[in-house]
Length: 349
View: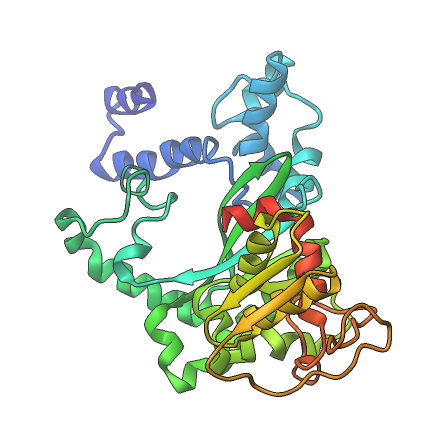
């Protein structure tokens, strides 16, 4: 990369400004090709076709590594054009990738949020060396704290839910999305509507994509914020994506660990939505449930479909997170039944 600069200086046209321009254009754009992220829209190349031969893209470079017989030139596809080694699929494939047509739809999405300023610097795309080890407050990160704070405030103003990480488990794609809010912001009354809007948009996006299960993590499922997700299920009753949270995933794990030949289960502890859903599901499986608790809240109606005395009917359809009007029904049981089939997801969460 120093050859063009050396040539310019030998010809008497070199300057300090030229060095900076060279580093900020040629080297930056060349490095961007290795980022594996399509930053420049296909619309730019369609509006200004000559740019196709001046700027290369991650797709352009990936075709070189995949097919190995084209797209040899870094930064300037013009020389591939002149040499007859330009891959004709470069721009159409770049357009498809930029539009997300080749993306694989995840089966499971874990919707988290930023915990605090320090933890925001531990994500993989910020500092991989820090993110690869267990969380710890490193002194070396303190000078960057103000920078991370500024970015956090900018995210509050103009950012949307974004992808943090992904992994494959037994052939299934799982992704972690993050709401661009820090933990302390969830306790600011004025921020409540904006946070719920971000969560709602993420749920609707997952629904459009065809995601099967979206789990609300940490404060995203706060009862005071959105009723554990019921706010969104009530507002959008036709959602196809299953909206769950940690309680339903926990129930799935517990029920999966109970041997199939079990005849009786003893439950102890305070009555809760989680314990109630587990008890009702076990009753439907003809398993006798003995409950010990300080108090029991409310009564359950008889089950007109049979199965067990005192067990309410199971709705024909519903989401893992029941609507407020359904909290006395068995929507949560249907949730658990589905989540047992998605047990690997539950184990990872």
